[in-house]
Image (cartoon, rainbow, N blue to C red; front, side, top):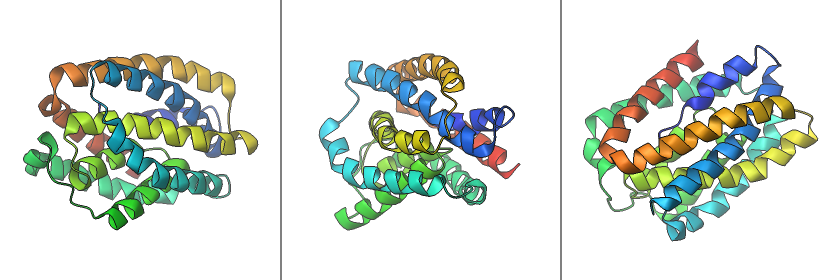
Length: 223
C-alpha cells in the first residue's frame, strides 16, 4: 500500500548472500508481487492506464541505466542519502494531507516530469529499496494522482521497470533464483492483500501506512 518492504527483506537476504546477490534476487520477488498487486488494483478499477502509459518511457530508460550501473557499483551510499528523502516524505504526508488524498493538478511540467521519472527509474533499477515510496511521492505530489490511484500507477510502473532491470541481474549472475522464488511467494500474497485493503479502505487509511513505511525504511537504511 505504500512501499518500503524491500528495506526489510534486502537486509535479511544479505545474511544469506552478499549485497549484490540480495539486490538482484529481490527483483524476482518484486516482479511476482507487482503482478499480484496490479491484478488487485485492476479489479478495483484503480489504475489509470492512459496516464501510466505516458510515464513508462522515462521510467524504463532510467531503470535500464540503473540496473546496468548496479551490476558494477555498490548501492549502500545511495541508500543512506535516500533515507533522508524518506523522512521528508513522511513529514509531507503528515502536514500536507490534502495533496495526498485528492486529485490535484499536476505540478510538474512535461519536461520536469520526464526528468524526475528517469531518475526514479534509475534509482529503482539501481537499488529498489524505497523506490515504491519515491514513485508514489512523484505520482501524488508531482503528477496529480490521489493516493489510491497513485498506488495503482506505482505497482504498474514497478512491474514494468522490473521486467527491464531483471535481465541485467541475471546476466551478471546476481540472482539466486531459488531464494527469489521463495520470497516471491510471500511478496505476492502480501501485495495482493495490501492492494485489496488499499482499494477497500481508501486513500486516508493508506496515508498512515505510508508514514510508517517511510520512517521505518529510513531508519533501517541509516542503520
